[in-house]
Image 1 (cartoon, rainbow, N blue to C red):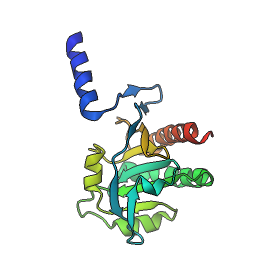
Image 2: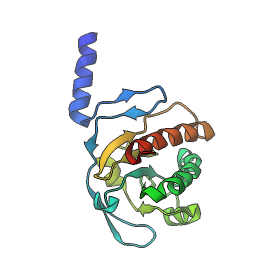
Image 3: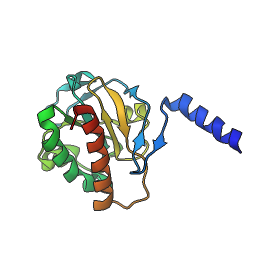
Image 4: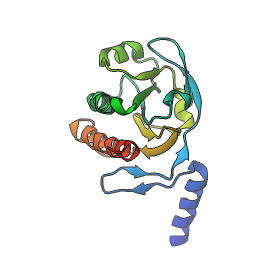
Length: 180
C-alpha cells in the first residue's frame, strides 16, 4: 500500500508540478511555481489584459468565479474587504469569469460588486490552464506571477464559515508577500 501512495504522489507531482501540503487551517501550501501566462478581455472596459504583466511586480488574488456560484457570492464581501485593505500595498484582485455556461450576466454582476478589480470575460480556457475544475478557483500570486497559495476543496457549505476560512488563508498568503 505504501508503494502505491508514493507512486500516486509522484504522478501527481509530475502532472501538476506542485506539492500539496495540507495545513491546519485547510489551506494548501504549494511549491511555488510560475502561474500560466494568459491574455484576456476586461469585462468592464474591453481592454486586453496580459498576465503576468498586469501585476506590475505586485501580488494579486486570482479568483475564478461564476454568477451562479453560491460559494463565490458568499466570498465576494471578503474579497471586497481584502481589496480595500491591501490596495495600499498595490495588491489587485484579478477575477476570471469561468464556467458561466450562459446562466448569468457577468458584466452586471461585476458592476454590482462595486469595488476595483480586473475582471476577465470568458476565462474557461484560462481556468483549464490553471487546472480549475470547480468554482471558485482561488489563488494568490506574487509580483512575478508565481503561485504562492491555492484553495483546497472543502466539505463546508457555502456561507460565512467558509468565506471566513478563505479570507484568513488569503490574508496569510498576502501578509507573507507584503510583510503585513
